[in-house]
Length: 288
Ligand code: ATP
Image 1 (spheres, rainbow, N blue to C red):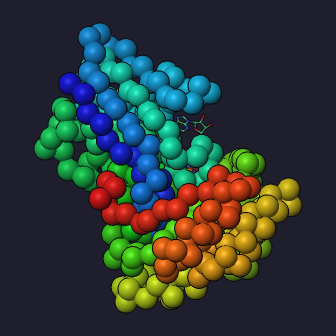
Image 2 (tube, rainbow, N blue to C red):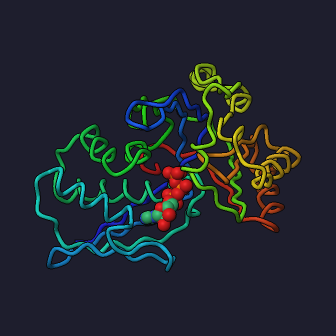
């Protein structure tokens, strides 16, 4: 049996850190958005019990270290099955270590395929619970679309979809370490927070300007100076006609919202001379 599943990247329209929890994790409040930039995950069943992962990026882990394999192992143990032999092949299109949840999305795609193959009656909530065992962003990636994610990322509330628009996503060559960035956060010193409630109202009203005005990521405020390129790209996106621009997740990827396709395509073209740049559209659950 062979199944292929898209694994969409996500952007953060808003990212807030509310506090530190007794378990050491941070209490987050994020507005997440799937985009049509996606990896392609192919799962084939094989004889034996081994789970092998191959990707077109040789430096990514092939065995249990790959989030796709971890997701498969958590799926089998959560449903009380012995692991089945699987060959998982991932065509990576989503940049790695980019704040776009590429790995989490691969894991979520594997969970969706395994539910289809072995547990078709399993609910979305049950699959998201398994996702939470794999990683903080995985429950959201199982669901996809426009979603408020709270807690570690496991408490999900569907939001109205982002109104039609174009997104230019730009990844500088540097990589930001997520743990390092969390370590920089001094909660009492975070003076600004996103207007998440206002963003949710703007989504309700399908008011793209109101949404764009409220793009905000608190991680930008604690970015060490060596990542100044993030702000250079934000400014370039604004000069190239973006309504607003923000970093996604723990960066360093930056995205801009555009109302019209032509301006967005020109901006992506201009940025691609220097960076990896993508012209994208928002999408709903599981890439639809
Ligand atoms: P997030 O937005 O959730 O913080 P990210 O976009 O910053 O994630 P990823 O690309 O999802 O980062 O993951 C990066 C790390 O995970 C790398 O260290 C990489 O080696 C490891 N990894 C394991 N499996 C995968 C995978 N399938 N795809 C990408 N990275 C993977």
